[in-house]
Length: 298
Ligand SMILES: [Zn+2]
Image (cartoon, rainbow, N blue to C red):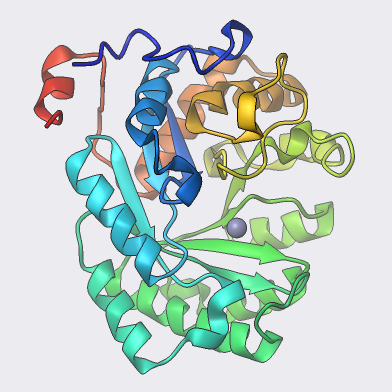
């Protein structure tokens, strides 16, 4: 048994043991990434100790989505998304589409994605990306679950594509928003949700977000680590291995709250309420209630 109120190991330096004043939902955690294979239970325990009680595991391809569903099945407070990342869009075909459709029927899957357009790296061609994204947009309409979208350097094309299909979509979040004001307002016009990461903590490329965070409507903003990627660059202590994890989400919330001019608790409550409504998560998940926690320990 692990006592969730204590950190289960001494992996995190004292200065990085945050605790959010209100429960948080990390809407983008890549916990099926190989870097978590060795100590996943400890990572989840540290997230709970930090009061990050909801974790949405990003499924970026068939294999990872299936792993995310399996994890969500045996841990309370964990959910999964299922999609094909734009980097892998060239692999999209009828059998993959059918596999995704079946994944979307699982109750653990709360969104279609990660899918989208990434014209920054073009690991798949833009045409392949558009084809896979449009197909997944159709799957979201079909299953009635929201889209979890990745967009980089493709804001205009993304807005045009969504504009055509927006009315039939139950909802869509632009995860890890990093773009400019014009793109943000385009997304606002489409009534999209916005996911913010620790990108805002990056003095090399993220400080433009400081002025923009106040312009994301309060009830459209959600927060995420995108771990193991995007470790905040302004953490108050060094982290062994430099792997980002959900227990550090309170630091990002604190940063966003600062630049929005609101309190940390207010922002934590608002983003969690938004995430629970958007992904239709169970009302309360209090892992600090002993009974809830015991049920899921095998
Ligand atoms: Zn992404």
